[in-house]
Image (tube, rainbow, N blue to C red; front, side, top):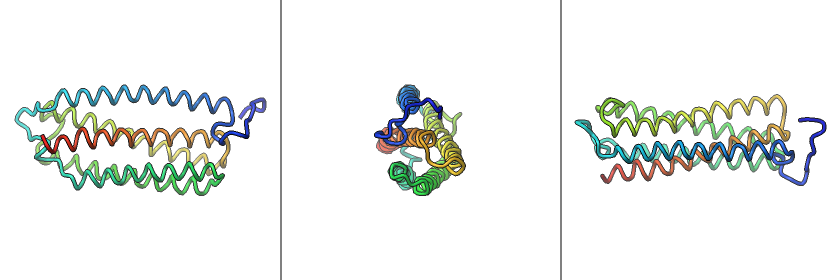
Length: 203
């Protein structure tokens, strides 16, 4: 932090400097671009729905149990991420780091079940090359899964910075931004759960 930077101690730690406020605003704009990306992928998926060629349909392969486990893990991770930010605002670095680690573990659990699900589909004859529908499905779900993987790596980097530099306006800003990113991924998953899986099961 610059020595000449004005600190507004009446604000939460992550908003106390102008640079932090601008960085957070910039990240909201970035999320707007992410919404456009996922909006395009959803639109492509829905356009390709029903174009199965000779491959299996979603109602044949989608299993509610596995999807519910993935949903539970990811939505619970959003809850733990929220608690992490609450701990940060209480000034507890240990609490912030502990809840971030739990969030990462839940994210890893989500990825494990998602990869397992993909392997099952491929074994059942549904891959990227099977049909236009499955290409759209794997592209949409794969992009979301890649974002979750990125979020876990990003969060681990912030944990290292928190361990080295402690809780200050810079690390607080970074922790707050990754929490926005994580909540965004959960919102995208809710659309995937309802628009892809639930609709796919009744098709």
